[in-house]
Image 1 (cartoon, rainbow, N blue to C red):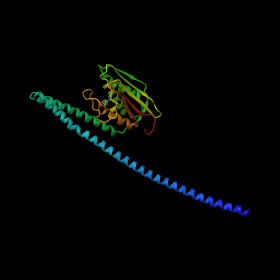
Image 2: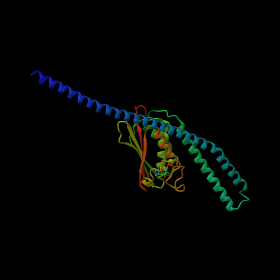
Image 3: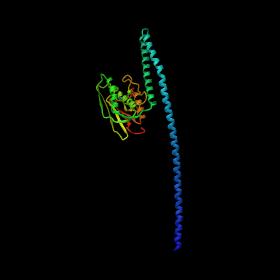
Amino acid sequence: AYFPVFTLFSGLLIWFGVVRRRVEGALRQSRDVLKAEVEQRRALNAELAKRSDELQATNKELEAFAYSVSHDLRAPVRHIAGFTELLQKHSDAVLDDKSRHQISMILDSAKRMGRLVDDLLAFSRIGRAEAQKTTVHLEPLMKGVVDEIAPDMKGRKIVWHIGNLPICYGDPAMLRLVFGNLVSNAVKFTRTCLQAEIEISSVNHTSDEVVVFVKDNGVGFDMKYKDKLFGVFQRLHSQEAFEGTGIGLATVQRIVQGHGGRVWAEASVNNGATFYVALPKAGRVNA
Ligand SMILES: Nc1ncnc2c1ncn2[C@@H]1O[C@H](COP(=O)(O)OP(=O)(O)O)[C@@H](O)[C@H]1O
Ligand SMILES: [Mg+2]
């Protein structure tokens, strides 16, 4: 009885040995695969970090470029406008109508260029400014914005609906710029309405962000061009119909994105526009 038990036992041992070696082999193999994968990921991460650094450097360079270009263009543009104005005054008597018209065209263009350059400079300053973030009560902020814009609207019929507005986390001066731009656009693009209606309220809060909107019943725009809206100098309406430089929404987007938020619009032609701004909620860190 001893012999078969011994054979059985040693057989089992051999069998265990074989199985163990197989399992060990398989484990070693998957460990090697994992190791290779980890290596690959590490390399990818390093590559991504490098690219991100490069992008940041390029961005900084572009920003510095926009800043110095707009800064340095100011003086010559002022000179063109200033001397054209002098020329207009002094040679008015000796010029014919055609030349007078041409001079006034030069002056208009120089003035417009001056406004574009000023706006571009203000825009690039925003990118350079450090945001001073704190808890912001949007309700008094918005009242301030509306109180500043509304008195200039003599001769216009505007009905304001201002709902409850939340508290968020951000730079109060910059957020004032954001809503100042959105509200003045709402006022501008409702100019053709007999009665303008502008609603400012909030929707759909999530646990970490608040969403505020500015809605008007004005001329609206074609949603086909919704991605153009936020570009520098991009405008969907003609200068003749609605004046402007097209830097407002670029400023809005830059500030909102700098706050870790989002901005988007919904509109249709002749049926009003709504601009939404999502901002981080008060108290969220690293926002
Ligand atoms: N409330 C609005 N209703 C309709 N179109 C708008 C509205 N706000 C902005 N837009 C469109 O987006 C363009 C860009 O806006 P913005 O950057 O503020 O430039 P600006 O006010 O100088 O024209 C505007 O020229 C207009 O075509
Ligand atoms: Mg504007």
